[in-house]
Amino acid sequence: MFITKGICIIIFCISVWAWNNDRMFNSLMHYPYQESRDRSYYRLFTSIFLHGSWLHLLVNLFVLWSFGEAIEYQFSMIFGNVIGGALFTALFIVSGILADIATMKKHSNNPNFSSVGASGSISGIMFAYVLFFPWEKLYLYGFIPIPGIIAAGLYLWYSSYAAKKEGGRIDHNAHMYGALAGLIFTIIIYPKILPLFFDQLLSVF
Image (tube, rainbow, N blue to C red; front, top):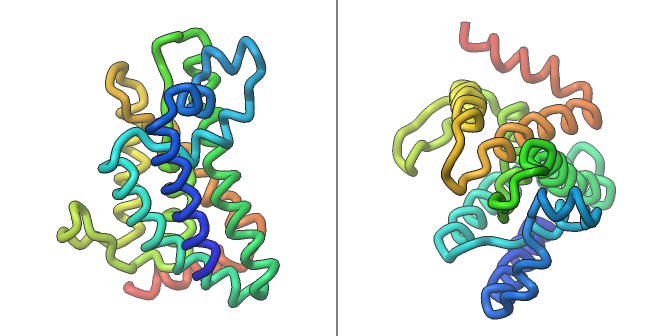
């Protein structure tokens, strides 16, 4: 779908460009300590399009492309191409920003913490996918099949657990709150998804 591909291209270009410009990279990254002091809240948005390495970038782009096209298509079918596309874009942005807000509150007095990446946004899209397709298989490590609803529960549990442990560079708060933001956003714009979700959920029993 057009918007998913467009977002992937923008993320790729900004990330690669910033790797060759340290000043740009530092000005765009999510840095709660700085944000809470100079109100550079734009970082909550710009950091979504920035990645720290080729592996980080390519993995996120693959997951975004895989799930994003499916949700963009669902939104277009429900709301039409224009409104559906706008809502899909909003899902991506809102999930990413709300995920970073949670991290900003937690690390506002920690000058050693910073993060980049679209993981919060992608988590929101993945959980919107689970609402539409709860029993569709997701593949852990690329080859272990797990029903989406079970994977979602494990993902939230692990993200909550890992977020309580200090250390490391993975922003588990962003994963967890981005996922919750995606769920809530999708339910708000399309309340009918809840009975459809439960119908699918109970269909196996």
